[in-house]
Structure formats: C-alpha cells, structure tokens
Amino acid sequence: MQLGSAAVIIFEHTFHLLEQRRNLEQGSVRPLRVAVQQYMASPNAAAVREAMSSVAHAYEAGFSRWISGSAKRSQKKAELIDTIIEVVLQHRLPTPGV
Picture (cartoon, rainbow, N blue to C red):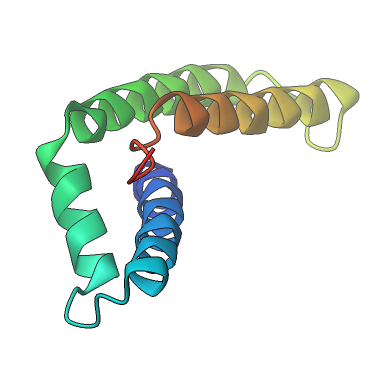
C-alpha cells in the first residue's frame, strides 16, 4: 500500500512536470526523476509511510474477525480504499507553477 500510494503521488506530480515542460519547452528535464527526488525530499514521504502503516495495521487487526464474503468484509474493504485515497489526496506534492 505504501509503495502504491507513493507511486500515485509521484506519477501525478510527473504529469504536472511534463505539462510544465511542454509549456516551457524544457527538453532536458527528466520529470519522473525530478518527481521522485522531490517526493523523497518532502515530508510527504514519511507522512504517507506512517499513515499507510497505521491503515494497514488497523485493517489487518480486524481481518481475522470477518467472515469471507460477508457484507462486513466488503464494507471494510471499501473503507480501506476510501482511507487510502484520502491519504494520497492529503499528501500530494504542490503543482509546479501554481
């Protein structure tokens, strides 16, 4: 979950860097590399890692009590997905040029 969440944040930022490069005609910049460097240098990397760890532990702690295929399990999965999306949205990197 941590890696996937980080990847979403990095890829979104890469998209913005690509758009900025296209608009400014900066051909030498490597947007993915820049996005990874900016993410790793930001406090967001540690915050996402910590948040995803907490989310995973909470989900796994309750997992053994759920009956496979039950409505409760489906509800918990939906809540997990919503929480992951919320964490990703809260820790996005700033849009360049804005």
